[in-house]
Image 1 (cartoon, rainbow over the protein chains, first blue to last red):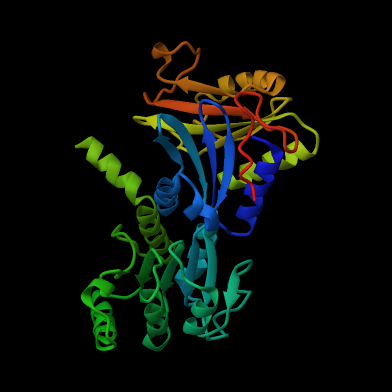
Image 2: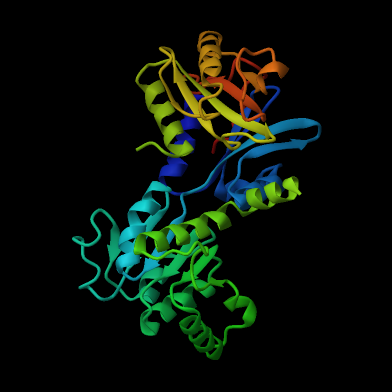
Length: 235
Length: 124
């Protein structure tokens, strides 16, 4: 690996752009393919596949073996609601390399004192989400319980291809939430994308435990392919 | 805090720029129960300082030893580790899995790798 290639790869990472470093295993020949150049690469389909799964791996073409070192930007976790669960969740999420932003138009909640070192936006979620941009490396989580705040975020999330949407609330409030979104024109397939009540069912009680259950659910989706492969192998 | 493999590659670049001999080990294939996923990196300098992990501690020692040779001769290698009795290596993975590791030297500037036909200059 020459230093130029390594520098270029790191530069893409710093700019939050995906890139793949391809190594031909037998010869050591390497090239860097930036996200924007994937379409023109001879290994294009394999690159797209591995970028989608956020996964490095070996591929073969014309009897030659290539290692695709996939570097993708960290997951953006956009949390609506500067509430108690968010306070517990933000430091845990940082430890998992998730890039957390907390969004809450109620500026009394979204204070640096309550969220030290966390990226805070005292804005309405639809404005913030539109500006930030939601892609398949993004998770959206609503925590306020307040329909006039949460629903705006859910609408934006459902219009995007973000990989995770979670909404805090009881079964009853979730059913009401789905009714409102249905009335707003979303179909059952859309609504099925929302994880609600949010989090894996681990019997969580405290805000910190709820944060663990939510983060575990996000990880289970991020590692879905790996999880499914292991479950299949153990059968 | 250095947690991700991207952080480790950034460190490899910094080490190289500060004049150290540097090798990068990458997990390229795993079978069975492997402790670190494909794409995990270990970066090693000429004084055997290292960062990152390719096996969660099982084979790091052997990889670091081999890295000293790679830093000296510049020849990239593929290393394979399995359970201790199935391999020529003195160490193995207690978890019973197997891993393949690509170990290469970080070369100055635009020099291609010593092994093979020179680098593809697809950098645009």
